[in-house]
Length: 283
Image (cartoon, rainbow, N blue to C red; front, side, top):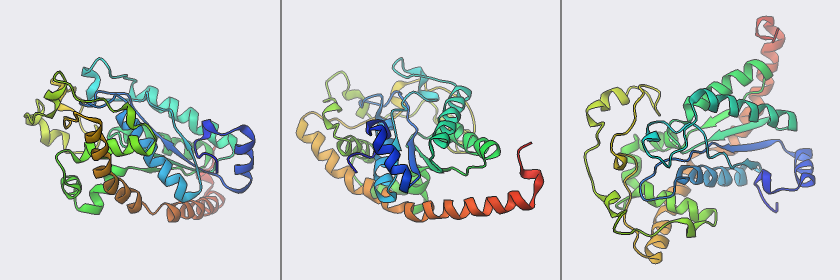
């Protein structure tokens, strides 16, 4: 295909695609404080992952969703903060549109930890209303399960800043490596290892994943995603190179072809349940 990104296709290209396939991967993003990296870092991570999954599943990608619920990073004035409710409503409307357009196998993904807070309710409510079973793939959970925990997952990647390397690799995958800013003396402080201001509340935070357990804001901006120093373009290119294997390992850990097939099986199963159990039908 000329492009996998829905918004970059012509209408005829989408019409032709939907004649043979109905898969779309939705990248739920955010614009938020992210150390010395651009505010759209986790949107770019999500879009790069969505692209790689769509390539393997012969699907399209819905991107340009960078203004959803951020969470604790609202402390930074660069963070764009929608509420959870607003994000749910927006994603719900997008899902309704995709279904009307003819997409039946809709897969959401995001590298933004709290994304599940607003994506999961949409998946459940769309099913109740439309009887379409969508899927959410959380790459952070995939990493944790693959490596026996998030800490192990990042330690396996190596390097001073493995998540930073992963992020720079994502910019490179999307052809946006030039968007990574060089470190300046003013931003070098992001690389300092400081105790998080929320360290006392780790037991509270750890009771559920991705801002699901307790609400808070970060007090110190360096609490969220302290990043390595990248003084030259060569150092940026090296970070992308280091991050590629880790990114590829995440993509490889998602059995996307089987998951798409399983969604078809689930669709048939749900249709049988609807026939047998009248109480599941929409009134």
